[in-house]
Image 1 (cartoon, rainbow, N blue to C red):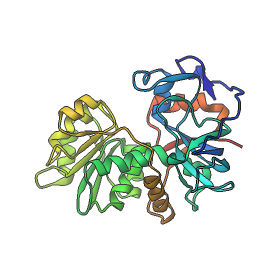
Image 2 (cartoon, rainbow, N blue to C red):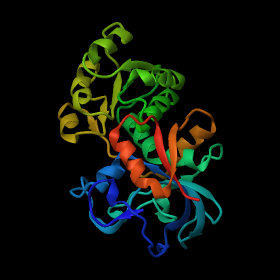
Image 3 (cartoon, rainbow, N blue to C red):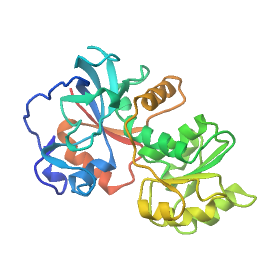
Length: 308
């Protein structure tokens, strides 16, 4: 599923392209599932053209789960038949994962968690790495209290669980009331987002009404109000509005591929300490519909495209 011009979901359509080349450090993956992320529709609309060179026809997608078909001569960690997952981002945007075959740099891959199916595995890479790298940026560890904005979303619901795995003593997650029970299942204390959030968080926390660290995936007022909820404003990470969060003294995080981190997350899944919530799977041909749903917001967990 590729595009030749930027715009709405309708610009995504089926294309017959040549099989990708397998360079020295590349792994040819037969795609079984591809995760759908907000960055996918932002790329489709052309919002990232100031950050990366873009080339068309542009195949969407950065998340993949599948089976290795072939490896380049410099690849030592994978062999044909291996099941893998990957956050396949490069320094230009063209050869994405909404495709039957993906030639992924080996540095972007990890072995698939054995305990889950391909759609669940495909929801892990980008969102899980984002959450982990945000938590590391703010140094979350033993006995920390952590506030996670948009905690029922793709990054947020993984961030809640990874924070607990890193030793956080309590995690407070913002979400609509319909997702509060879901957050409790993940080990978070839910709080409704929107006007008056600082007061509601303070009521839950007690004491000085502040938390040790915060992750922001929402932007807007959530981003601007977070510093008043922190004991140390430097322990604030956001994936939104880099100028604002840096000016506040926090950290902007744009997730990077990292095989070691992704393998660590896969082991967490296999231990039963990390659950990837897949709200819905769709066939690859319905990528445009998946983008529509994600762009509307309020998706719980992940949307995933499947390839038969």
